[in-house]
Amino acid sequence: MIPTRLKIFLLISGVFSTITTGLGIYAYWRLNQENIGLNQQVSGLQSNLVSVNAGLEEEKNTNSELTQTLQIEQEKNKIAEARVAELSGTVDTFQKLSQLDAELLEKYSKVFFLSENYIPSLLVKIQEQYTTDKSKEFLIYANVTPFLQVMLTVAANEGADMKIVSAYRSFGEQTSLKSSYKFFYGSGANQFSADQGYSEHQLGTTVDFTTPELKGLSLDFQNSAGYKWLTDNAYKYGFALSYPKNNSYYQFEPWHWRFVGRSLATRLHDGGQYFYDLDQREIDQYLISIFD
Ligand SMILES: [Zn+2]
Image: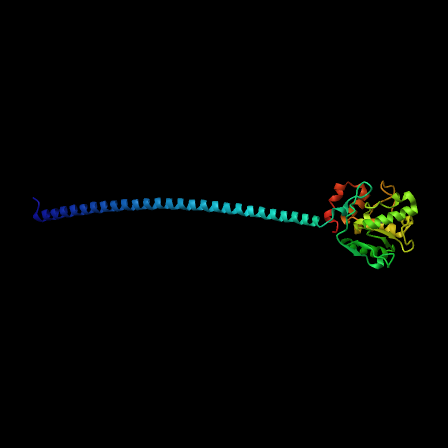
């Protein structure tokens, strides 16, 4: 026989354990439900995160595309700037060349003509101290003046005193000079002075030198300290001897020096050549720097 108290205890225990179990199952079920909910939320968040990441990636790609575009634009600008600089350099060169008479570096002779209409763009008076005749006006191409005066000053300081006996001569002056040479020298004058219009003196860049002792044009100038000095140094000041011994144009004219610019004169001096030895196309390259 089971005592009544035990029965009651067992009943209560049974009811209690049923309730506990039921509560436990319910709690488990609830937890499970919550877990499922949380899992859903997590996976929701995860998928959100994936899409945010994808968005960021896209953003990044767009950014790098923008950066690339920017870089390309910058490069394009650089190229454009360089091109502008190059073009303006070319324009400068054209401008510089357009301001220089091409005649200044052309070869003249009985074959190469200089137009009778050619007049240098700017002629200035050579200071009296450098000339043989103070009563006469000697004209020279303006840009040549500093080279000429410095050359003669240095030469005088180094014991080679020289004076200018002839400088610019117009086409007309050349014509009358030619007649006077003919009067003195007959047909031999052709060998002595350039025919009218073929003279380098019409350029305004050419001078004839003499010494204070000789006073005029003379072949004796070739034996002077002045001629020796010019042969060694004139190139430094842009001057070159036009008609050396045995040239095929005229007789030897030791007194006749033409300004061709320092770079060309140096090229001639270093190469042991004369102006008329060179091809005109080679000479033309020096026009741009003639007064440098
Ligand atoms: Zn001359």
